[in-house]
Image (cartoon, rainbow, N blue to C red; front, side, top):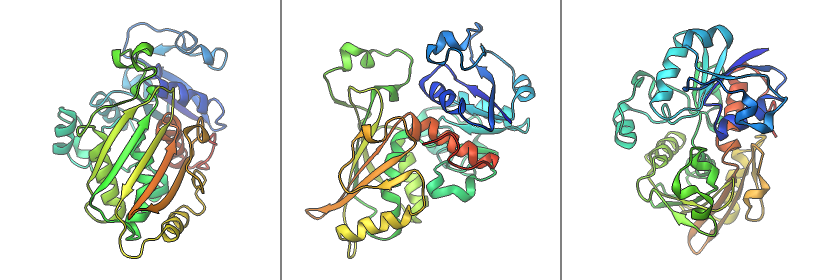
Length: 336
């Protein structure tokens, strides 16, 4: 059994990780970490898990964690996560980092978008990006993996094969994404209280959202060309899910048939990506590690619709998928 520690276990991603690991035949959760001095029992934080784990959330040192666990999932705010990851890696642990700390390629870009000096800048640009459908060979056996952002997952999976195949232009790509409220995390914030967000629909982070440089970087890596997108996220009054509608300019002889064929060929044999015949809904992938993508060409534009569960394929499911790869387990273990 591989012993697992989870930092930030009190949040939504921590909850989903625990649900998945509870049915993982090769994993045993041995430590739950909190930065608070109190040590509540897990059942007090997540009543859904009463009886599933007899563990408390503890404030442990890196040495104590390394004694108890072989692999850690870090679900912490940016900068704080990198500090923890560096400590754990120096103790020969493996880490799947769910923060944004290792997703960008250099310290200057990180500081520009996150307004913080990176505490472990030497690993930027060297850490595998944890999207197995595109970077599997780099992830297998890695010590540290940068788990992708939720919005980037939905957009990158839809666009990367078309950019690689030369079917869309690298300029003028527009990504219009909508997410459920759980994407904002569990910490109470006024815009996400029920009376504020229910029966409402709003854009946020317009032109400034931190997932935009992540999308640019990964699409540029995946397609071997410089890509810049215009990305706008929206908050929708639902618990979970992301739907991204993407518009791109066709290139060459792009047709509805060639676009669909390129996507199907790119994901042939992939267990968690399906190219579908009708525009998908978020409920089609809720509580799964799956991504459904619809593609066509309309009025001179390639139009893509991509849906994921933001808490699973956009966070904890992808993290378990990466955990399986770095530990040598079947990639789909504990996932549907």
